[in-house]
Amino acid sequence: MLKPIKLAKKNFLSSLDTSSEEFLNILEIAKNFKNKDLNIEHKDKVLGLIFDKSSTRTRVSFQVAMSRLGGTTVDLNPTTSQIGRGEPIRDTARVLSRYCDVLAIRTFKQSDLEEYAKWSSKPVINALTDLEHPCQALADFMTIKEEFVDFKNVVLTFIGDGNNVANSLILYGALLDVEVRIACPRGYEPNELVINNAKKMYKNKNLLKITNDPIPAVYGANVLYTDVWSSMGEENQKEEKDKDFLGFTIDQSLVRNADKDAIILHCLPAYRNKEITDEVIESKKSRVFEQAENRLHVQQALLSSLLI
Ligand code: CP
Ligand code: NVA
Image 1: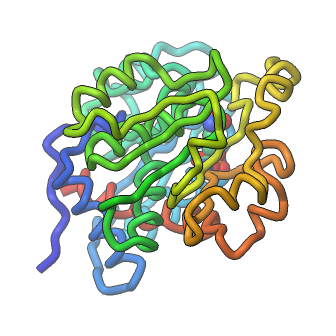
Image 2: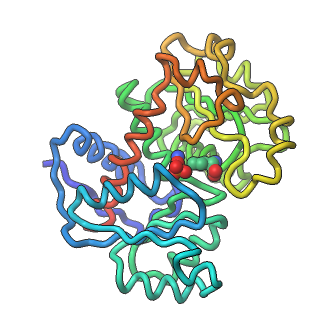
């Protein structure tokens, strides 16, 4: 019978934190949750949500996931807790992990997330940092698998900012040996450490391509993916980035250069007619709402694998 595998690592802070076996198990469990073929109970378990940045999908999908497992959630943010007053992370983490069974944290610095994980006696999940968004990438790969059955010969092209979402996609691409092409303006390349880690993991090092030209990057691609040009915390760079990213919009002419059966992904929220046109996001090729739905299923599977 299909069962969650207890993750070898205590925390899920990065796409680096699961082996390929654990990753594929999470996707399989998620698929079974989605099809209502699996029922796992973590009755009375409590998930603490600490969100220093806004969220719609991540917060609500974690709340619903926990409720489907028979558990509950506590939702904290800097204004309603002592976190905004500057209580040290090491104190917050030690206290909350005495009340909660698992914590999901959305914050700015990856090092702050790591500090929570260091002091928490319970598992900590990355619900987005400036560096990574691994829960999103789990849902993205689930969506890709639903479409293409397996990852063999899949080419994933990400067009836009080499940001948290791009970093997590690269690391899972490396884990699975999936071709990942990142097309970004000069100066907006993904994190160097992430690229180096990915290169160490890829069996075929040529499968990771970083370019400043979106047109060749989409040739033959099966998945076209984009995200906002200015992430949360970068609001003051918006004007400059809007100029720097001209030519990096996923529009119909770019889509025509991809594989004829290519799908379109966006983690949402989207700025229509900036990083993606309204026409493309609403087109038949778009899987953005399946992708958003899959956040729920993969996180329910992830929680099941951490709470065993
Ligand atoms: N994609 C994503 O993480 O969305 P939210 O910011 O709404 O959680
Ligand atoms: N890169 C975006 C993702 C939002 C889900 C951000 O960090 O704001």
